[in-house]
Image 1: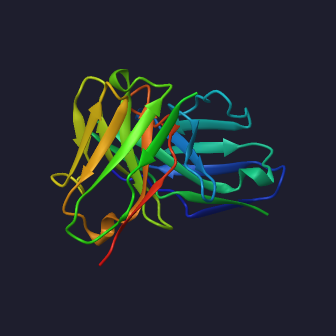
Image 2: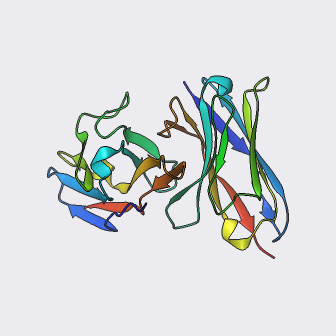
Amino acid sequence: YVLTQPPSVSVAPGQTATIPCGGSNIGSRGVHWYQQKPGQAPVLVISYNSDRPSGIPARFSGSNSGDTASLTISRVEAGDEADYYCQLWDSATVHWLFGGGTKLTVL
Amino acid sequence: EVQLVATGGDLIQPGGSLRLSCAVSGLIVRDNYLSWVRQAPGKGLEWVSIFYAGGATYYADSVKGRFTISRDTSRNTVYLQMNSLRVDDTAFYYCVGGEGSSSFDFWGQGILVTVSS
């Protein structure tokens, strides 16, 4: 099973950024999203498709349907510039899979 | 507050062995899911291994048979024994805790393992 993310997404401050994660019938699975800023450990920002962990701003949201899961960041700020990774648990292989990551650039 | 502090990173020659340790606080190792995730410099994230709360362990194909994950519940610590190290094992290794088995909820700082002659 492969998770496909675009290498990069660019957005102007104040606009909305959408980062897709593609996979076969991914809508039937629970997808998690992580933010990783340069030199730092990743941080869970969305779990199980659309749940926000404590401390994550409401500007971060997620959705999952069909063959695409998405992370949406509203009112993007300069501090949101980071790499974002999708992830899921594959029950068929009992492996935990990550997408290749998307670098979000705030113009 | 959950904290995971990993130690043991080093420069090691190909074919060598290394043991990473991860001291956990704020999360009971016995009752939760502890994993190792690695990231080669400038690359993406790769899951390495997980120790289930119930005791089961699982490994990525790339490390199966060479790496062993273990835990010491009395010390609330998780370990990763790495044998037959290869150049492509070079990476930052993150110790990660999860309250469930699916997501990686709490991350420690990464420690660098460099495999080179």
